[in-house]
Length: 148
Image (tube, rainbow, N blue to C red; front, top):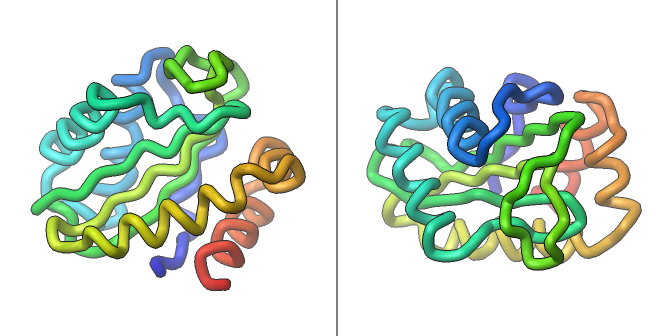
C-alpha cells in the first residue's frame, strides 16, 4: 500500500465544482511526481465520475482512477470548509476527498486500497478525524489505515 506524504494533503483545497476539485487533485499528483500527465489523469477521474459518483456519503468522496500516466499507486487527501454537491449516495454535500491513482496494470492495488479505506469510512470516529484533524493527524490516520 502506498504511504501518504505530507505534501499529499491539502486542507484548504480551492474550487467550487467537481471539475475544479479534480483538477487540483491531478495537479497535486503531478507536483508529487506520481503522474506524467495531469490532463490525462484529470480525464481519467472525470470519466470515473461520469460512470458513477464517487461520493461515498457522510461528506466524503473517493475519486480514483487507473491510467498509463500513473507511475506508482498513490493516495491524496483534500478538504475544504464548504461542501460541494458531488451526487453522493446519501445526497449530502462533500467536503473531504481521498483521491487514489494506480498504474494501468494496478487493478488489484486499486481494489485493495479502496476496500481498506471503505471499511474505515463507515466509522463515524474515522470520518470526524478526517474532517477535524490537522494535517499531521490526517496524515497519521491515513498511513495507519493503509499500512494496517
